[in-house]
Amino acid sequence: MPAISAVDAISAAVQRTREFLFKPFSWGTYLKLGLVAIVTEGLGGNLNSSQHNNHSTGGGSGIAAPLHFNAEWIAPIVFAGLLAILISLLVVYLITRLRFAFFYCLVTKTKLM
Image 1: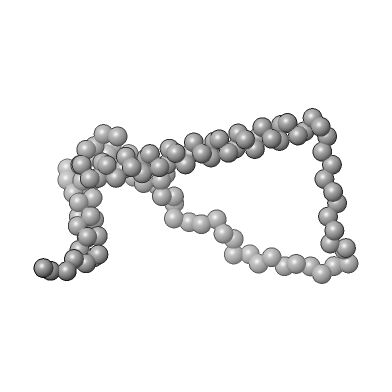
Image 2: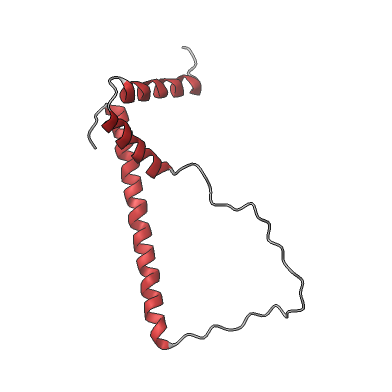
Protein backbone atom coordinates (compact mmCIF):
# COMPACT_ATOMS: atom_id res chain seq x y z
CA MET A 1 0.00 0.00 0.00
CA PRO A 2 1.55 3.33 -1.03
CA ALA A 3 2.09 5.98 1.61
CA ILE A 4 -0.05 9.08 1.36
CA SER A 5 1.76 12.34 1.92
CA ALA A 6 0.38 15.69 3.02
CA VAL A 7 1.71 17.28 -0.17
CA ASP A 8 -0.50 15.02 -2.29
CA ALA A 9 -3.59 15.97 -0.26
CA ILE A 10 -2.83 19.68 -0.38
CA SER A 11 -2.09 19.71 -4.08
CA ALA A 12 -5.38 17.88 -4.76
CA ALA A 13 -7.26 20.43 -2.66
CA VAL A 14 -5.61 23.34 -4.47
CA GLN A 15 -6.40 21.76 -7.84
CA ARG A 16 -10.05 21.25 -6.84
CA THR A 17 -10.34 24.85 -5.65
CA ARG A 18 -8.74 26.09 -8.89
CA GLU A 19 -11.23 24.10 -10.97
CA PHE A 20 -14.13 25.29 -8.83
CA LEU A 21 -13.24 28.98 -9.09
CA PHE A 22 -11.90 29.23 -12.62
CA LYS A 23 -13.54 26.54 -14.80
CA PRO A 24 -15.81 28.21 -15.94
CA PHE A 25 -14.79 31.57 -14.53
CA SER A 26 -17.55 33.60 -12.91
CA TRP A 27 -16.88 36.95 -11.27
CA GLY A 28 -19.84 36.49 -8.92
CA THR A 29 -18.60 33.19 -7.52
CA TYR A 30 -15.01 34.38 -7.38
CA LEU A 31 -15.80 37.61 -5.53
CA LYS A 32 -18.33 35.99 -3.17
CA LEU A 33 -16.03 33.18 -2.09
CA GLY A 34 -13.06 35.54 -1.96
CA LEU A 35 -14.96 37.85 0.38
CA VAL A 36 -15.96 34.91 2.57
CA ALA A 37 -12.33 33.75 2.71
CA ILE A 38 -11.10 37.23 3.65
CA VAL A 39 -13.77 37.69 6.33
CA THR A 40 -13.25 34.28 7.90
CA GLU A 41 -9.46 34.12 7.75
CA GLY A 42 -8.54 37.78 8.11
CA LEU A 43 -6.23 39.79 5.96
CA GLY A 44 -3.12 37.95 7.08
CA GLY A 45 -1.71 40.74 9.18
CA ASN A 46 -1.46 40.92 12.89
CA LEU A 47 -2.06 43.87 15.12
CA ASN A 48 1.18 43.57 17.07
CA SER A 49 3.23 46.68 17.15
CA SER A 50 6.96 46.62 16.64
CA GLN A 51 7.46 49.54 19.01
CA HIS A 52 9.29 48.81 22.21
CA ASN A 53 7.81 50.05 25.45
CA ASN A 54 10.35 52.18 27.23
CA HIS A 55 9.56 52.31 30.90
CA SER A 56 10.82 55.49 32.38
CA THR A 57 12.37 55.44 35.79
CA GLY A 58 11.27 58.95 36.57
CA GLY A 59 10.73 60.34 40.02
CA GLY A 60 7.09 59.19 40.24
CA SER A 61 5.96 56.95 43.04
CA GLY A 62 4.41 54.39 40.65
CA ILE A 63 1.14 54.27 42.56
CA ALA A 64 -1.91 54.93 40.38
CA ALA A 65 -4.68 57.18 41.61
CA PRO A 66 -7.89 55.33 42.53
CA LEU A 67 -10.79 55.47 40.08
CA HIS A 68 -13.84 57.40 41.16
CA PHE A 69 -17.13 56.26 39.63
CA ASN A 70 -20.45 57.87 40.19
CA ALA A 71 -23.39 55.53 40.72
CA GLU A 72 -25.00 56.58 37.43
CA TRP A 73 -21.92 55.47 35.43
CA ILE A 74 -21.89 51.86 36.65
CA ALA A 75 -25.05 50.74 34.82
CA PRO A 76 -23.99 52.10 31.37
CA ILE A 77 -20.51 50.58 31.76
CA VAL A 78 -21.95 47.17 32.63
CA PHE A 79 -24.47 47.45 29.76
CA ALA A 80 -21.71 48.39 27.29
CA GLY A 81 -19.59 45.47 28.46
CA LEU A 82 -22.45 42.99 28.07
CA LEU A 83 -23.30 44.43 24.66
CA ALA A 84 -19.67 44.08 23.54
CA ILE A 85 -19.63 40.44 24.69
CA LEU A 86 -22.91 39.74 22.87
CA ILE A 87 -21.70 41.35 19.64
CA SER A 88 -18.37 39.49 19.77
CA LEU A 89 -20.17 36.16 20.28
CA LEU A 90 -22.43 36.94 17.31
CA VAL A 91 -19.44 37.76 15.10
CA VAL A 92 -17.64 34.56 16.12
CA TYR A 93 -20.80 32.56 15.34
CA LEU A 94 -21.20 34.17 11.91
CA ILE A 95 -17.54 33.66 11.01
CA THR A 96 -17.78 30.00 12.01
CA ARG A 97 -20.91 29.54 9.88
CA LEU A 98 -19.23 31.23 6.92
CA ARG A 99 -16.20 28.95 7.24
CA PHE A 100 -18.41 25.88 7.10
CA ALA A 101 -20.39 27.33 4.17
CA PHE A 102 -17.14 28.02 2.30
CA PHE A 103 -15.89 24.49 2.97
CA TYR A 104 -19.24 23.03 1.90
CA CYS A 105 -19.14 24.97 -1.38
CA LEU A 106 -15.67 23.68 -2.17
CA VAL A 107 -16.45 20.08 -1.25
CA THR A 108 -19.77 19.80 -3.10
CA LYS A 109 -18.90 22.25 -5.91
CA THR A 110 -22.10 24.21 -5.34
CA LYS A 111 -22.04 27.91 -6.03
CA LEU A 112 -24.86 28.87 -3.67
CA MET A 113 -24.38 29.63 0.01
